[in-house]
Length: 191
Image 1 (cartoon, one colour):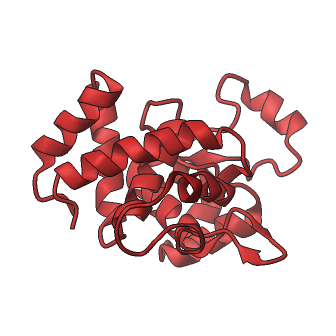
Image 2 (image 1 turned 60 degrees about the vertical axis):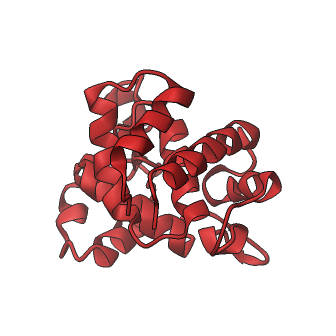
């Protein structure tokens, strides 16, 4: 939780530029879902959302520049294609998210609920905490596996954390964002 949101936003603006109201609304949906996470975990979640939403901080659908007809024809997991701050895909993951969030089947009945900012934020938190999105022979990729539970993370730790969502694709860029968000969270009194 932030103790000084004004300082957090001032720090974010100093590094990432002007924030539209829509971006602030996105932060306001995500931050409560991250409450209680260690500093590095929260910073990495914000960095991931910033990157995965093309810096909009609003939930997006997979291949948002394409049509629904294109998604139906080209995505083998249709209609369970990616939605949210991170791309929740496949029916099993929608079922897992529905159960974890206590939605009693609502997400399975309407997958577009994953586009609601508060739900998308909770999906991101649970998925990154519990390793819903990827794994390897050593287990699931989780925040705890890659990042410290106290203090700041190293560059190498933030780069390795990219495996939680998307292998090593853009790991260096997302690491930069994580460092910026870590500073902003510290300045905002993340506790």
